[in-house]
Image (cartoon, rainbow, N blue to C red):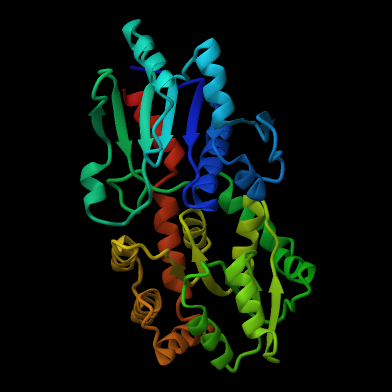
Length: 371
């Protein structure tokens, strides 16, 4: 096994969860680049990645952007089939996406010469208790005899943690010192004197309940709506409310997304990457999960709420809203608590705990060095 810091890494990503999968993989690639490990991101939806990574050309088959080599999956597989693969010392398979068979074969051939890559399956984020028992567990390829390590991001010391850039705190301090919130809100034609509520959710979420919560609040505020169908529909629902300044945010690169979260006083976020960034930002928020037939989203939500939500108002409002059993009084109580700043201390404590556990990418490197 590798006993030194790998010089290169191949990260494989198939986009299933829209921007979430691409966002996590792009952030991971940039974290490795910052740590001096040359990343190659092999992704099947470069066009999706380009929405949140402005330097990425959505039609290019192979390119380098912000220190990351970005390669279209099909083009990568075809080139490898023709010319052979040279696996990186560190191979990251994200979310069980499976690798091209010929690439796995090349890894097996490398193992025969004593140069086996360190192969990790980076799984989805979850706060469920079973994650601790499955994290850092080796599995064996059924036919090739090469090993793969299961690695789970999560919120406890017995997991891989979450991604936190080394300069995160410094960037936020500089943003605040430079009146970043005022500048950002003015750029959206919003009022920086008023509180801001940010919304990034799915169109299948209970938009009616969310709209009622904002309408029923007497507080004058900015409502910042992310791009997409949910934002389109909420804009139509809220545009006639005189006490609400409804504005649309554009697609932005990940560092600017952090700035939107830093500028908000409360909100709604969805997916994995945005979910983590809202927690790091110490933002009081509702987590908009995507409903599935097996109700896995409810299990994930409840597991996170058990670990996260110290305030009963936050726990109840989020649970009822995702269960499509929203209670207007409960939702309004949560928003009023957020407006009063009653949720801020707990949000800051939780953010401090996540940051204190260390960065996921650094934990991966440390595990590679362990062998």
